[in-house]
Image 1 (cartoon, helix red, strand yellow):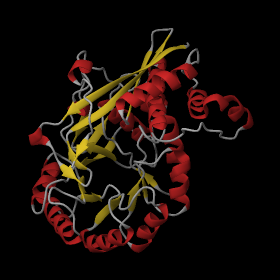
Image 2 (cartoon, rainbow, N blue to C red; image 1 turned 90 degrees about the vertical axis):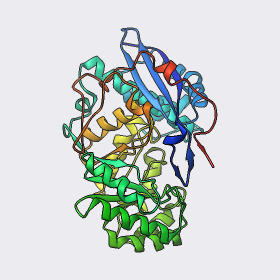
Image 3 (cartoon, rainbow, N blue to C red; image 1 turned 45 degrees about the horizontal axis):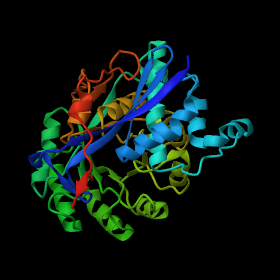
Image 4 (tube, helix red, strand yellow; image 1 turned 90 degrees about the horizontal axis):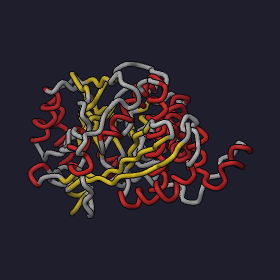
Length: 388
C-alpha cells in the first residue's frame, strides 16, 4: 500500500452569544479545527485532525508534509513520523539513530504533523480491521471521564458543577477565572462553593490556563488545599518550567500540565525539573499518537499518571479516547461541557459517554463516520476564537 495524497480541510464552529463563556482567554466566539486526510492506492483513507490556525495548518500539510509522504507505506508510522519531523534530514537521522529535526519543529508545524500522524494511525487500524485502541495495545476497554467546565461566577459554580455530577460524572474541573474575573479571594470562594455543590465524594480539579505568576499561584494553591483539590492545572505560564516546579514544591495539591507542550523533548524538561504530577499531552499538539505514546512512557518511568488534554473537534476527542484506552498509566479523560457541536455532532455516530465513563466503538480505526454535510455545516470562518 502506498500513500497517494495528503490533504486538509479547515473548519469553524461559531458559538451563539447565549452559549458563550468567558475566562482569562477571553470570550469564546468560535472553535476552529482542521481535518486531515491520508489517501492510498488501495482506497483506504485515514482521518486525522489538528489544532492551530486553519489556513496555516492546511498550507503546511499540503505543501510541506504531503510531498514527504508521497509513495510511502502508511503502515510505517515510525518512518513517516521521522520524515515529517526531520524533513530533508530524515534518512541520516534514522541511519545515525540521533534526532535531527527540521528548523520549524514546534508550533503550527508540529500541530500539522500531529494531524497527519493521527490520520496514519486511523488508516493503519482500518487496514488491519482493528479499533485503534486495540492496535495500540488495548490496556482497557473503558476509561473514567471528568466533566470539563466550571465558568460560572461566584456561588453559581456550585450549581454548574453539581449539574455535571447529576449527569453521572464523579470528577469535574473548573476554571480559576470565571465570568466575574480573578482574585485569590474570589476564586477561593468559587472553589468553596463548587466543593459544597459536588460533595466530598467527587474529584474537583481547577485550571488556570497558565494565567498566574508564581507567587500568586502559590498563594492560591495554599488557599485551595482545604477543599481537597485533585489537581491544579497550568498554574503558571507553560514557558516557565522552573516556576512551575517552585509551585509544585510549595503545595500539596498535585500539579497537572502539558496541553501546550510540543514533543517528548519539551516534556522531558518538565519531568527533569520535577514540575508535574499529572502529565497532559494534547494529541493534536504534542505530535500525534506516535509522540504521545513516547511521552506517556517517559511519565510512567517516573511513576506519573497521564490525563490527555482533549478539546476541539470530534476527531481529536476520538483520538484522545483511543490513546487513553491504550495507555496503562492513564487514569482519566477530559470531556468538554462547553457548547461544541463540532465535537459532538461531527460524526454520524454518538460518543458513548455514560455514568462518567467513556467506552469506545468496536469499528476499525477511530471508529466514526463523518457526516455528509460536515464541510458545509462547519465551513471555515476567518477571525479569532476568543475576543476580549
